[in-house]
Amino acid sequence: MHNISNLFLKIASSFIFVLLIISTYYLLIPKNIFFLFLKFIFIIPTITLLVNLLNLIPKYLLYQLSKIFAAVVMVALIVVSYLSSKRKPDNVSELYTDFTWLINWPKWLDTPFMHWINKGWRSFIADYGVIFDAIGYGLLRGYTELKTVIVQAPWPVVIIGVIAITYFTSGRKLGTTVFVGFCTFFIGFLNPRFWDKAIETTTMVVIGIAICIVIGIPIGIAMARSEKVRNAILPILDTMQVIPAFCYLIPGIILFGLGAIPAIISIFIYACPPLIRLTDLGIRLVDKEVIEAARSFGASKKQMLLGVQLPLALPNIMQGINQCTMMALAMVVIASMIGTRGLGDEVLLGLQQLNVGAALEAGLAIVLLAIVLDRMTQAYGEKIQERTQPTKKKK
Image (cartoon, rainbow, N blue to C red; front, side, top):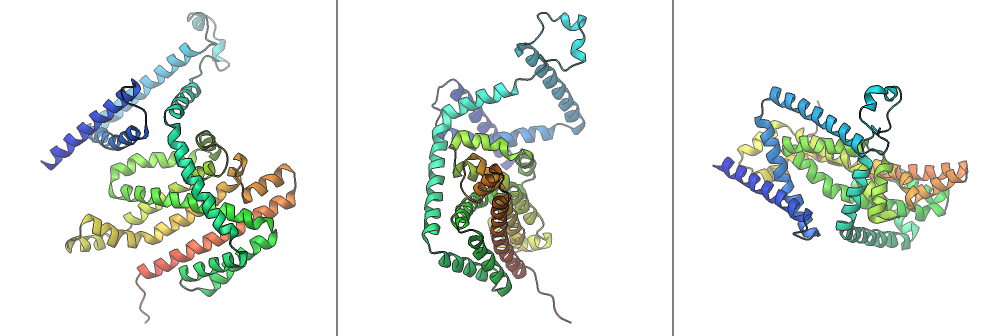
């Protein structure tokens, strides 16, 4: 009975999703954030229903159908590319009489992906651009306020604050604390101009990592709890990691303009996949005997997640945050090409002026900032790991 109700819910959600798409296309309902949010809600059970239907098909039959579908799509793309090309022959019979198109790549064999993407992108911006303006304003306000607070603070106070945070998060390790304090001091000691630049870079990285944590950890939890969700999200993560950073800087500029906001969005896209993967891995690596013990004591799914799985997976999650931090800093130099201020801007300026010393000096400042953030997050992860792992008895 429970399975029947779930199936009915998925079918109803799929029907509502299709109805929303059709109504939006024919302008029966307005294209605003409310209906966009409804689409995102109802698309999840729709995808689940499609996956369930595909699971009912035998594997050998599904394999044959996928080959037939791929062949049909390939033929359709060739036909569309030929019909939409402005350089196609005047008559199809020329293809059978003149075989020069077999020697050099024919100019009419060009799938118009670019035109489709640009047309869809312009329509998307026209319908939902206001939403991204609001998101950009919120991020810009948070970035400006945080940067102003840190910049206006005296530099000794900032260094002391970094030292204090490192001392307590590392489990009061004096060596790590002294090393982080030295690296923080040396950023300004390299060049006084780098101090404010480093604060701007750190602010962008911190906001980007915060967005990664808020979005990435729940997605990693969902992947660990459902194999179907994992199979659906893994290709998206692969795409996010493989696509060059310059490709998603362009839509970031169109949606949010120049400056720090598209850089923060690029940091999220570039740095979030490792956090999602390691969160998923950490929860999956929790000992099954521990889970069975918690289940035997009557723990609910929520209690098991919050009281057993997440605490034991926390070292892996902290390692994911550490990797997220390093990849965020790797985006700093690339983001400087779209008008983002910070240490990456100094590296770009040195390269444009062929000033090797200035570029290397700014690069060294980025390395020092990376060491500071790496030691802070790694030391906290080691502290958590020491708490979660049982101590070995001395013989």
